[in-house]
Image 1 (cartoon, rainbow, N blue to C red):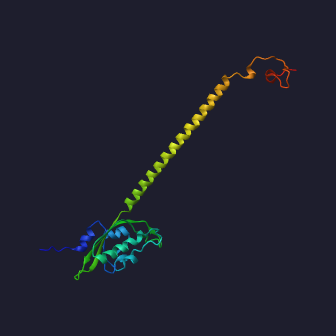
Image 2 (spheres, helix red, strand yellow):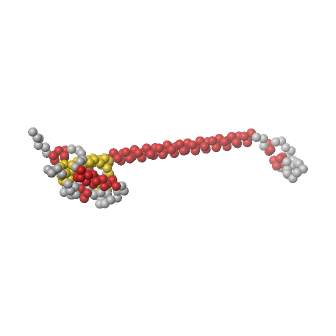
Image 3 (tube, rainbow, N blue to C red):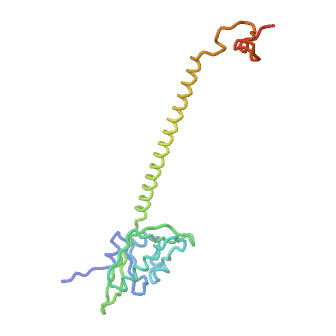
Length: 211
């Protein structure tokens, strides 16, 4: 006995985003979760070619945006399911013409054959994993900043040690200088003395006679 199942109600009840394409990649059905994930209405999507309804971001710098089309073509060619893990595919902002929102997806494209065995439908399950990717990126950035901060702290510590060493050497040098006898501290006559040379004696340079 085969139970009668309302497929539309089934797909609309599931929390995962689902979309159904025909062999020409025209959208024939989307469930409520898919509309929520893309910010679109059924009128925006159903009856339109997939890449017209959800155009690729021309400003993307990598080739990853072309992967969904390649995946769908593989399904049509091989008749086998194809999976895209952590696939970037930006979504155009509906209220900002020409603007795109960065989005990441985990896609599974599953073929459904027709009576002749050829692929008649492709079911796309598209899980939005943008939050996961952005959180991982933030953790990596935080880790990179932490390593950089540790490096800076280490460098500052080394420099502080060097400054301390130089200050200590200067302090010791000043202490030695204070302990060493200076010509000016030696007893000498209060008068200028003549040493027989053109150079005055140490006492003469230390203490000048008062007139």
